[in-house]
Length: 265
Image (cartoon, rainbow, N blue to C red; front, side):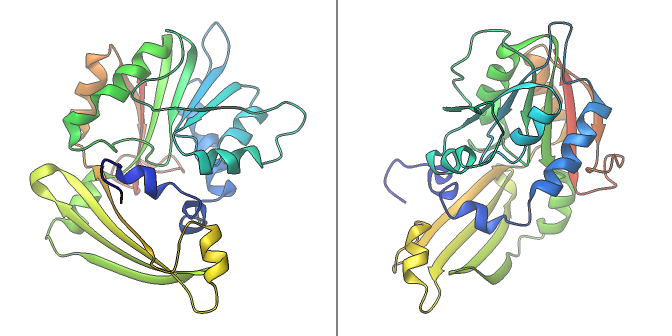
């Protein structure tokens, strides 16, 4: 990683969709089928949705089918290039490259903001993530909703709280992948060290994914919140939690592996 470069500037490169290929359009549909059951995507002014951290657009293509006018924002040029390659029909997809801590949109622009598949918590310990919450509150219309889809932090603490790293090695396409996850209790972060190397005879294809012969290594660091911390962060921006689920099937909190939290402005 270059000096001054944040982990997410490397992690969300051309290789990212391959690492998470199991997070497909079918899963995205399950998520988006649930959200309107938790709270409306629209307000009286209409359905204008911001997919914040939209990645390669797997949720955006489904939002259009729900009749919403949607915009996707992401910092990764590589993932936005993938989103532009999707077939969205006759209407061009609205995609913006930008930083979720400084959104390039006017106040009260959207009836809903979606932070899906843990597109949040990237900026250090829990308290360091207030800036994107502030921006969400700013661009939401009164009565609008922020939908936060996050991993179940309580479940993660139980899984990794002993301090021992969890290691997984696998082969995906042209890449060998090694991932080592560890909970850093003092900072309330989960760190995942990722090492990518080309498989034998697959160097040319690996280079297309941004992985040279020397390999690619970075460490993701994502905040591990309590529900109270998230509620308090939202409250500072005049948002209140109004609904929740523990998974894409609508499970109660604690009964699934996700936290799907809905905050209303």
